[in-house]
Amino acid sequence: MRRSYGRHATRGALAVLGGCVLLTGVALLVLPGPGMLLVLAGLLILARALPSVERFVEPVRVRAIQAAEESVTSWWRLTGSVLTGLVLLGAGVLWIVEERLPLSGWSTGLGLILSGIILFALLVWSHRRVRARRAG
Image 1 (spheres, rainbow, N blue to C red):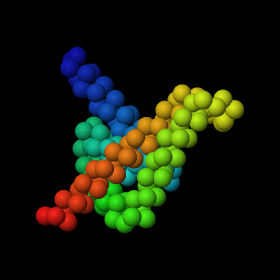
Image 2 (cartoon, rainbow, N blue to C red):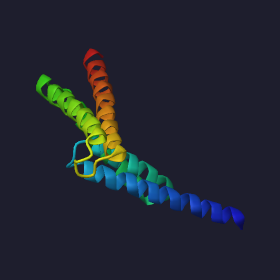
Image 3 (cartoon, helix red, strand yellow):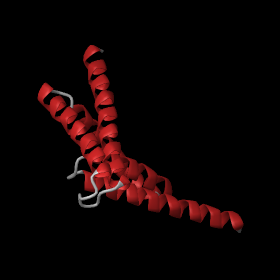
Image 4 (cartoon, rainbow, N blue to C red):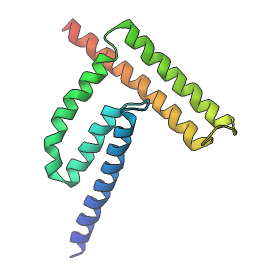
């Protein structure tokens, strides 16, 4: 009986976590950040709790990888992505040190800085993936 509660609690926690990650990803589809990849991560977490969600994972995975690769296909897009990352990092620092900005503080600033770091990591990953595909 006790194992049943643990299993239900785990599924419930995964469903809540997956839902939060999914909603964050949906918000980041229009805001600066890795929206499609967070939507994918949210769906992967939700699929562990709700197996019926699994059918949505593959189409989103294909689109997320395609979007990541498109971000490094031209110098203009790559430059724009790098500039966006730098703006996110700078804005994060600004939101931490300047108290007069709306929603200023560590949480907003660190969120912006983390988005910039994730963006740079994704750019490096996408660039290597595209280069490997062209070479091979």
